[in-house]
Image 1: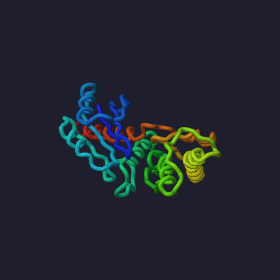
Image 2: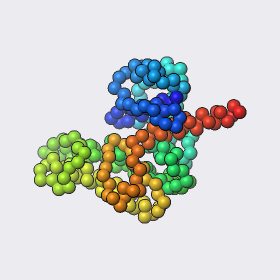
Image 3: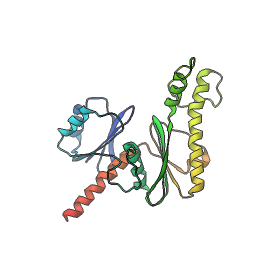
Image 4: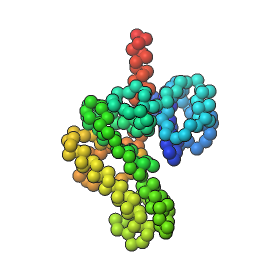
Length: 245
């Protein structure tokens, strides 16, 4: 069994995998030691992988150090099937990219992670990173409008809003939500025109109702990051088995 940990800018999540299937996912709201104790009581974990973009968490490191299984901390330097990964590339982006590649190798890929920030990662059919884009997410857009003006209030992002607002809140929500959707659709259309066989994956905390002409090209996968971590551990286990034989 694998323990997969995702520490983002706003939340920490984990998943348990048998190597091919995610058996359990959850948000982490308890101390790490208590969380690991709960997991170990229910699943025989033998390896762990961590993706983190947060500041160093000493409590997490101490809790993992006391566990009976080894831990892989994903970085841009971690061996993986993707190429041209630059130094400093986010572990969360890399894990999601690997999760997409593992499902559709030998295809050009556009991997979109719509979280605190929105990232777009473009790969050719050989798994070479062609480049990426980083854009503010919905809540960051709302926060920026509030913090850089004198009178605009701060609102929490909502799941839907009118296209045209007739008050301050709806007007701000429209730009944040619909503006973000139009941004996604613009990038997807542009890259599909360049790469007709492009596979598009959308993950992250924010979901969007894309236009019908694009929806069929997009795979929504909220667990893409976990699938990437799962692939890394499963593939290295297979390498160890091959060497032993």
